[in-house]
Amino acid sequence: MTPVRPRPRRQLRHELYSLASVLAIPAAIALVFPYDAVEFEPAAGAPSDAARCSFVELTEGDEAAALASARAAWKVGASSVRSLRADLSVAAMPEEAARPVMDVSERARAAAAGKVGYDVPPMPRTMAAPSPRRIAADGGADDCSAFPRDEMMALERNKETSR
Image (tube, rainbow, N blue to C red; front, side, top):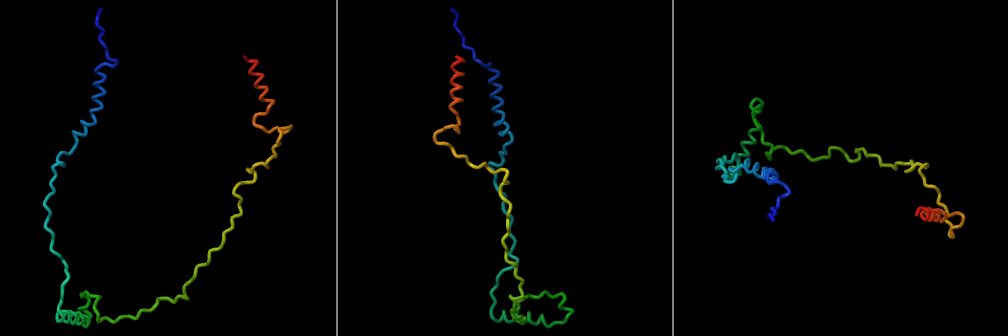
């Protein structure tokens, strides 16, 4: 008696083809992965610029001198004013009295929304269901059941004759 050697259903080379196609995706990812990003060290930050503006605290004398020079700037000739930039926050400027631009009574009112009629019926009359019929309680001549007795009996007769 010779020993029976079990043979696989699929050959080994078919299994290797399947294994290679499955391992192709992880191999492709491993080849294109940026390994330099793992040990990333950010570059040293550039030194920041000094502040271009800042808040200052003035003494009362310094404040009075600044206001006096700003007020004097308004009293110069027209030729030197052309190149002058004015600070609009100067307190010596004349203030205009607040007044409404337009009276409330001059405002045009919008017309009140009126009702909009819609006389079109939602469904055409031709699609209306027929009026309901009264169903007889005893199933007399006006038999409205889904399976009339005569048809059921005819089906039974046909079934018996076909056997």
